Amino acid sequence: MAREDDSPEREESGEDVPWLRDMLDDDLKPLFSEDEGALKKTVRAFIAEVPDDPGLERRLIDLLETALELGNDDSSASVFTAIILGEARSRRALGALGRCLASDADEMLQDAAKVALLRMGEPAIVALMEEMEEEESPALNRAGYGLLGMAGLLQDGAVEARVKDFLEGRIEAERRRPPAESAIEELFRACAQLGDRRQLGAMRKVLAEDYRGRHPGIQDACEQLEENAGGVAFVSNLAPWEERYGWLFEDEKGEKALRRPRGTGEDPWAAVAEARDEEDGAHEDGPEEDSEAEEAGRSRQSRLLWGLNAFIDDEGGEDAIDARRYLDRPDGEDEGGE
Image (cartoon, rainbow, N blue to C red; front, top):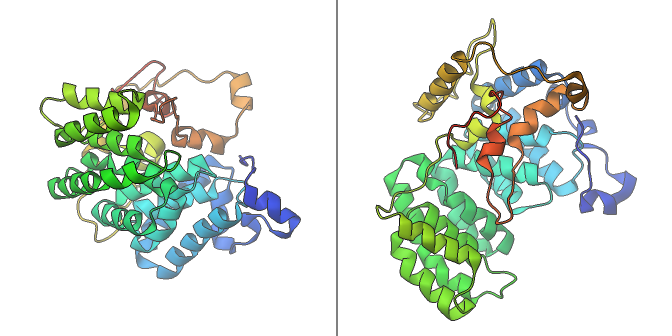
């Protein structure tokens, strides 16, 4: 399904800029397929090939950068490319994924980049913090703090401690920014999500001195930490990659499961995927079929993307329950989540 293109870059450039699909080599064009089965196979194949094919890796990074720069992707190829690079743990893609994270021109691509960076773990987290210190970009800071708040998912105490120290060191810098550029709310939300009760005093001070005691976002962060007596990081039951594109980890008839990229060691989320497979097996009858009217309203490829949509609420958070609703689960079933 083609996505509606309303990017300022393309509007300003007019007809001189070709569509992304017309700029790529033939072997990358399966990423634009409308066939669900073919697209799944393409994504799985590229994830397996990228670690051993630097040329393919470079061309996928170029695809991502071109789509971001020109805003000329009328499909979801760039979104799937971000998924591929994250699953393949492509360190060469860190810069491109970081730029996608900092851009809100395409929320679906931004969300895919966030999940890809988190999926890559410590190297991506460290690179992001360094980039935030160097660039001092309000857009990158807002998105970056949101990602850093999810570092507890990595189950790495050293990384989590480093992130907490980084966030603590950013408080005064954010206070000095003009209100329109400050990401202090996103920073404090990240602290709360990580269960860093050391920052309660700073939160209360900023709330009292800078906002006269009234700022809903900071107040919520304070309350979350006050209730978290153990200072435990909030970790959802379902990893973001399982929530967004869980189909990637499922077996297909007559095919083997996704081959993990070489050199990555054991996948810490393999147990999550296995548990999900077992749960799905308990529902052999599966969800009821969509009505013909509903099915006619979306293409097969668009159904793959339901789980990738970032459902943003009024406070800027993600509605994980809504996201999971599109992972082929029986209606009304909920695993907890964020």
